[in-house]
Length: 181
Image (cartoon, rainbow, N blue to C red; front, side):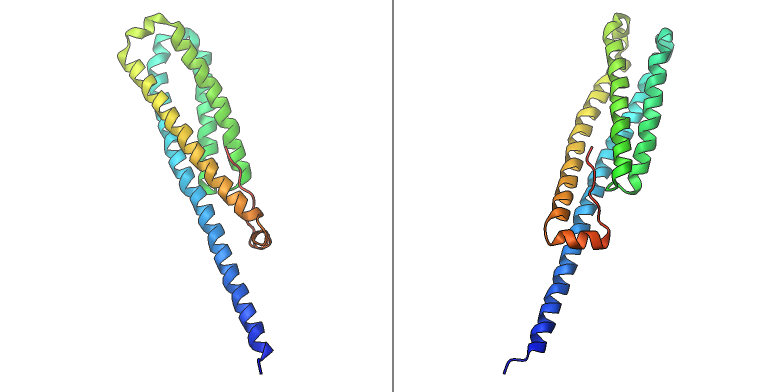
């Protein structure tokens, strides 16, 4: 005769292995967010360095545009502080939201600077200046691509924590929905 206690133990073992597998999957997806953010963070740092070099060249050339330069400096500082906060936990919602806002402010300040460069014909003779502008444009394209990778990683993680029955384990283990940029 078949012993029902073996069936119970078998079901418990199956449930335990499923829980371990689901947890490992969620951790793997969360680690993918961290990896994707590390790539994005490299481009954010490169953008900060290039902007600093660009401002160092432009400040003496356009002394009447200090407000534009100060706005970009402030936006850059805010973006770097937000990026620093995200480095610790790129899957946490609030720091990523702050980075999104800081990035939008930075983009507006950078757009103003690029518009300024277009309107000053006397700057066209500075080859180093336009080499930095080209470098900045390349960094922005790369940043856009790595931002897309980050958002895809966040999407995969968020999809996994909302699927039943993983949704139950996600709440038990404290997995929360991640925020995209």
